[in-house]
Amino acid sequence: MICWWSLFLLILAINISSNNGDVFTSMADVGTLVGSAQRLTHVLQELVRAEKERIQVIEKFVKEQKEFNQNLLIRSNREGNSAQLYHPITAFRFVKHLGVDWQYYSQLIGLNLAATAVDEVKRLSDSHQIKLPVEDDLKGASEALVRLQHTYDLDEDVVASGDIPGVPTKTKNLTSVDCFLLGINLAHLHFHDYAHRWLNLSLSLYEKEDKAPREFGQPQLRKAEILDWLQHSVYNHGDAPWALELSEQLLKLDPEFPNVKENIQVYKDFIASKNLEGKPADNKQKLVRGGHYERLCRGEGQLNKTVLSLLRCFYETWNNPSLLLQPLKFEMAYTDPEIYIIHDVALNSQIERVKLVSRKHMKRAMVVKAGTGDSETARIRISKSAFIAEQEDPVIGELNRRIGQVTNLNMEVAENLQMANYGIGGHYDAHFDHFRTLKEINYAQMHENWGDRIATLLVYLSDVEAGGATVFPRLNVTLYPQRGSAAFWYNLHRDGLGNENMLHAGCPVLSGVKWISNKWIREKFQDPARPCGLQPDSPEWVDGWPDPPGTEKKKADDYSSHIFGNGSPVK
Image (tube, rainbow, N blue to C red):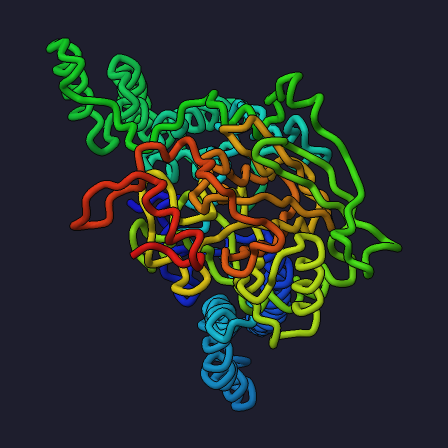
């Protein structure tokens, strides 16, 4: 017997096969599901209307047949014989009714309107008129909830309630079925430390819901199914005695449940052996709450008093006449290295236009493969992004010129504007924007003539309801998105080497939509705005650069002539 949730996952996996399972990586895509849901609702409404008409016609046939039978019976009884049946007109009508009419009605009864509706949905999906989530989206959304739990220190019952601290809006609570599906998806992902919590919550909710009347059509989850997955996840989490207890409950509830007796024996043998290392907990993807990064995301980081005393706000014109009447508004977020929030960088009209232009180009965001020029998708970055060239729309040129104004840097050696929209629990783990790091120097990513990424301007294109901060773990800095404002920092020391303190991350979006744009500016031609230092100023590089293959290790200052000479990377 295939249980309902297996069928549900099977439908997700094969029924809408044309979708690629990346809806969860962009809240803009999640927003488009509203339109898909409306189209799907229309198809189902048409199905219901057609089914009602079909039933009405069949009911008419049944009514006519009953009346015919009844009239025939009454007249036959009254006349004391079956002469009425043998009347040629009656016989003709009888034969016609059970012959020709029945053929029509039998075809009507055999119509599979539901299959037709499913085919129509698949046609709409294949032609990209609607986009429906697939199994990977459900797994991605499940993983996102765990990420939010882990980062923002939330218990599963709080998340399931729909009333999450820090989130202004409350939503409908999760049911036992919701928690069960979430739990088994987490188990498939080997997140057993969270999977068993959600499955246990599903069991608790099931006990409460089981006492309440169920609505027609509501998925029927069996307690045995919850107990089976819960014992599996608990055992992999490392608690064999609890797994044994749950399996014994399952055996009592359903003695014929598959493998329950075998599992009980396995757990008894394991416990009897007292070999706790015999079956290590399956924690390949275990998440442990309470790191410094998570505290910064929660807004619990505090700058020391010395740094706070040096922070200030000021107006800046860069001696640019075009900025004299409306100077730039700078707010210092950190002093050494300098990190700034620049206010009013982009206009609302520009923001809406650039989002509209970029939507058709958005694809799942990639990360750079270590030591290569290639990219790949990864769990550490959940968003969709696109690089947009100036030729795409005049607004891109406007923003590029504005970025040149606010940074006072040369945009001739800047990369195309990157747009990004974060997904469900969307985030970007701690990373560097530059390619000269202590761990490695990625020569493949450094432009032959332009060099490394000297600076980053990150423009916030939306306010975020909750979460989604930009944090610098090594500096204890947390920046919150402000629509139209931008964060600005230099990635490199003045001697051209990477600043290891510029490690930064995008915290998971707890609620709302996060849009950003990145402008990465390369080294060459930037001397007028940021002159090179006369002496190396990168203390973390005292032991030199990572060795390129086949070379001997050199001190950082041995490379200074190359860096100061033309800004090109050493090869």
